[in-house]
Length: 68
Image 1 (cartoon, rainbow, N blue to C red):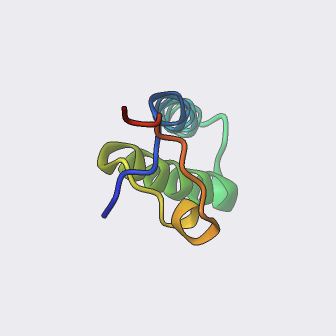
Image 2: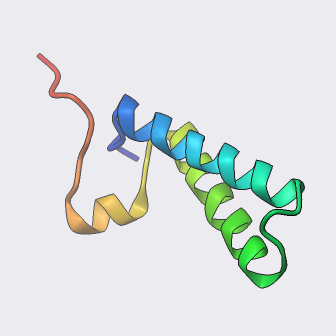
């Protein structure tokens, strides 16, 4: 897998996952919506750690800086 996530993109994904987790575990967001958001947050967290997003790959998006 070729890396296709830049640092800013990774930070945004991690922040979203943390915010969703806090909202879910403090019972602000519950039910089906809460479960869906937790799953999405988990996927975003996983993709940020492996520096690869399959959806970016499909659409040809690359947010990594250009190497010199």
